[in-house]
Image (cartoon, rainbow, N blue to C red; front, top):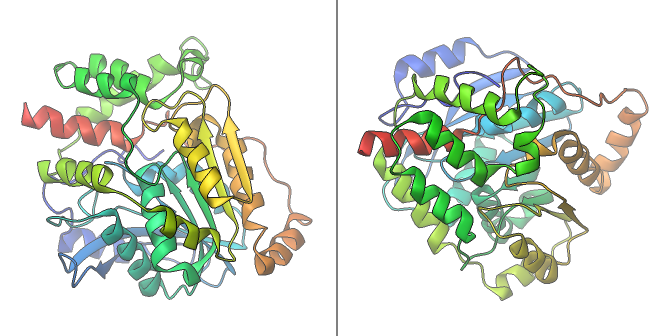
Length: 361
């Protein structure tokens, strides 16, 4: 992962010098820019995004990330899909985080409409929508408000509202507030994001270390060069989570749509209770429901290959993209392992949240 993925602005994150540098790096296969969104919803504000793949690619994918996390947390998926000419994918920073502008009071509904307006900016009529954690909550609101824009819907480690994190996750997060030492904070917070099995497994980059040791080292390095986002972002994102609620009748409206739905969770998720995904299964009757054994909250990292293949198979359930992707699958060899970087993957939610906490202390 890009070593700057955890580095964020202490202000809005949107300045003219950054914007100019982004536009200078644009090419046919990679673009970094801003979309103006939320003019009537606490804005206008700049929403930072990156697209990968040719603009003429027939299959569009919009990835939505969650609480205190930037679009960079989707890099493991970007590196997989950008290799194939049939895809154009987009990742972005939600309002208030990363390079996107800050706003005052907002909800997951507002953030869903940000995503819709981003698609308008990209001139995407429809796309495959993939949301994780709070990004999944945003994706659910997207599905309620703009169902005609969705080809398929993927909801990972998320819920429809009125849910609190497991006690272990809540206590771990609270306990981390009282530690100023970055390595101690990391040791605590990693247990809320990953399973014990994953953290104790051997590092691929340095077999003499465990993934826990590797992630702690990378975390400390990032925190030593990370600026804190506004404290309002932490409170704003927390407010979004605790006020998020999609009623049974609105979930029923999603169930009655034509697009396929995939729901995924891990048995060892300590931030979003796995039973929430089972609740979504009962209410949405998804096309597919996947439970990863011995997997924590970061399913897109812990089960990297399985997750990528699961969502790609899901994309093929769309009647038009099915023919496109099946044709191309016959012409390409899908790699089993994806080389995403020379450094371990540290979720930006971990560095961003700690940056706020450290500055506040």
